[in-house]
Image (cartoon, rainbow, N blue to C red; front, side, top):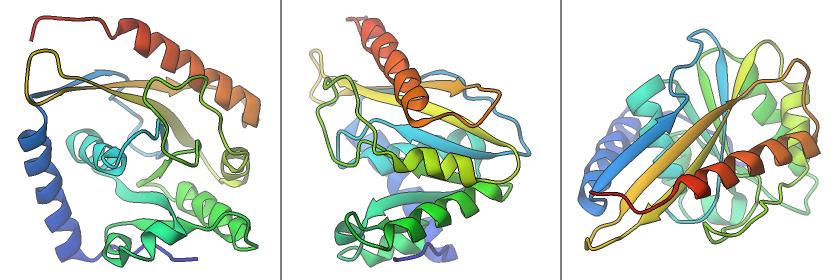
Length: 208
């Protein structure tokens, strides 16, 4: 597997690149929900995987609200062709390979360290933002179960609307997933889908 690195120049450049492009390509960004998180805990951020933009949405959220050490899981065939992304925190998973376990354990290790943000897209492939229910790969359960110490599980749903604008409106809705014990695969999937349904129900035309 390809492990994450954090080279200062690349981290700085992609922070700037992301901020500029969010302003350039979106007419407005609305963030709703649970943005305030415990300061001393690591965070597992789970999002809907519907576009090329997804990792940049997560990076933008992190820079705006939490400023944690950024990690994002990518398919190895995609990351191997964009190795510069490993220098800002991207790491790989290769499906149908024995190294899958290494990637899942690596995710757990990152989640075990305070100050880390681990971004996962458990759908495993890009789907329409309106596709539902979201189906998650089972590895997400192993990541959470094997992580040590306290951590926060946070869901986000990203949705876009153009209305009458050339540039779309981006809405990011966040919800903290609270549970007393390590949740199983079905519990995580169900909770995320409840948040997805609620987010889509709120996505009604508004004055912009």
